[in-house]
Length: 582
Image 1 (tube, rainbow, N blue to C red):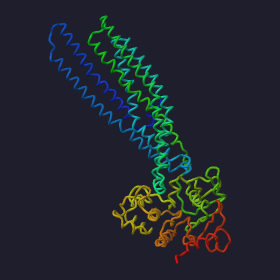
Image 2 (cartoon, rainbow, N blue to C red; image 1 turned 180 degrees about the vertical axis):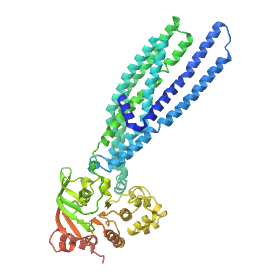
Image 3 (cartoon, rainbow, N blue to C red; image 1 turned 60 degrees about the horizontal axis):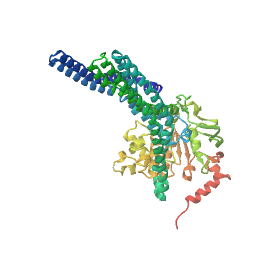
Image 4 (cartoon, one colour; image 1 turned 90 degrees about the vertical axis):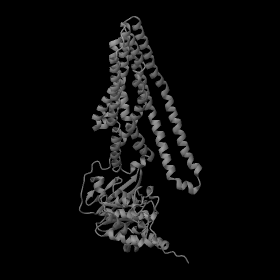
């Protein structure tokens, strides 16, 4: 338990001073809570003394008592307010910084990381795991530290009245500490099951929500919902089992403290009966005996939560220890933009996808990559942008191995238009601005015009300020693709990768998109994956892939004269694109 507290204090880093000051305020606030009780006992003692002496109680004592109680109540709330201002936002501020740091880190890991780790697991790490620290970390530290510090101070005071009562209190707290350690251990033991249930539930919800269109189109609400129902039931079962496992330890913890309270009352009553303790002190001790352990009693919830936080921090540490793909990279600026593959081989796991590929994409030229589905076309593009590292061979950009770059310095040289376009839940203007954060409205409009999407954007109710649904769900496939092209045009990088960039473009606008792409060729290196002849024929070089191997290289005129995959491919495409309705 204290080990986890130490980890949390280390985690908050520069906010430690605020934490310590807040803890001091909480300690003083607790004593301000005790002052009214002590004052009442003092006033009662005065009243009894006056009665024994036969004198009247003066108003001075009443006003003094009232003043002391009023000041202590005011100070209590002032100190509580100050503690809250100092401490309560620390977890939120630190968690926000860590989420941003991990978000930046995820840009620098291999895409293989996302294949090995489920979306639900990553989502749980960045949300629920951090929420444990964000929402509970500071309060748990405050509860545990102040609970024991306050008790220590009270135990010292008890020694002034009865060393027997002080020892009883200490023994009770030690026994409760053993129970708290059991709660903490049980919490750590249960945490993997709890995390597994959370991850499974998050992953199932995401899968169900994303698959709603398929569910509806096939009318399979029942089978699809069954997985979601099963995840909910499993989560309920696991969490009920976890709560039941805490009951024995919670009972032992509370029993030790309540038993200590009863024994303290008996000890002080015995002292009063033999004349070594006055009645007001007895009443004071009786009131304190059942309230002095209040902060300690609340630590059972803290022990449970700290166990969960400890397990969450283990997962966060594991996430943060993920190797960056560019951890040895440097910020490199290049003057030339040739892309060279030199005997490159690559596979996802044990299955090799690219086999000994070698070719050069010269600066200011257009390279078309063609081949059957699954032949490795997109994989080649992912390798040159270092989404993955090659298994053997090397890829150079501007004469530098891509492994020498940082991810940011490498990607500054690339603009990409993906086959499956993703737009963020933001305005259309901001989705285009993603290519250049400081772009002006005029630059955004110019890029949209070049990508032939200005016209349809202008017809929308709010134009460029129109909100896009999650993933671009409110737009058609062709509209999303054109916005993605506008984003790439705006970035104006020297190398442009077009992965089926015209796949969803209607025939009426295809020639306009081709004009935009042709305009990009000036002074740029273009890598395009395409099936349409209009795109392929204009390429300076065509790379023909077959099962991960480069089967042919050359321009359209050269390859069409050769028997092979490309000639067959062109023949098939001509028949497919030349059909008509009669």
